[in-house]
Length: 245
Image (cartoon, rainbow, N blue to C red):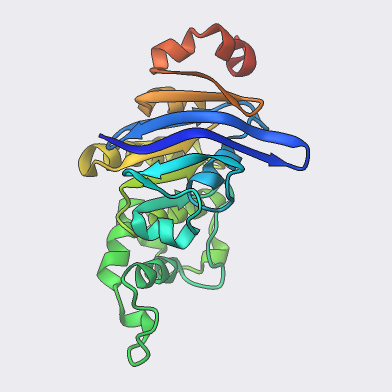
């Protein structure tokens, strides 16, 4: 079943056409990688999918609903999780409280004045931290985390609304090879066990070719190729524009 449909999406900043007529689909439970050289337009494309910026033209459909003009919080409540290229967390809070804050929003419990937030959703927060391997750091201040651990935490935050679609921008950036393998295994398990669709950008081509069901390749704002990993490896345009072989 097609969950996300992107149709002729375009975006320009000033005279710079960053994304030009991009179209693709993502099915429920499918893992799709969006790759390409720096400046290809990947992050801008992602930002249009979850409402961070509005497209100049084109359409974004989620489960048949046109969401191109929706706000990020409305799209999040629809079941679209998002992880960013630069980890977005509250540095002054503990790891557990960062996840708890996301759960408060999901459960619409932000305005429960008569109960301390520190007493809410602890088990659910700890379950998410366990899933991303952060249980030992639950009580640690977020501002003291190594960058790889920040990326793990952000993944837990993205999963806090039990997403049907997870958008993740460079999930393994700044991680050791062991941590990269653990995070990509987590994305794979999430898709296979819960049926959540995963669309991610990543410069680690080993990770891309290991877990992606399908790969989209952008260059200079346009989609130049799409296919399974074997087809992308041998695509002449992709090899010239990105793979460098």
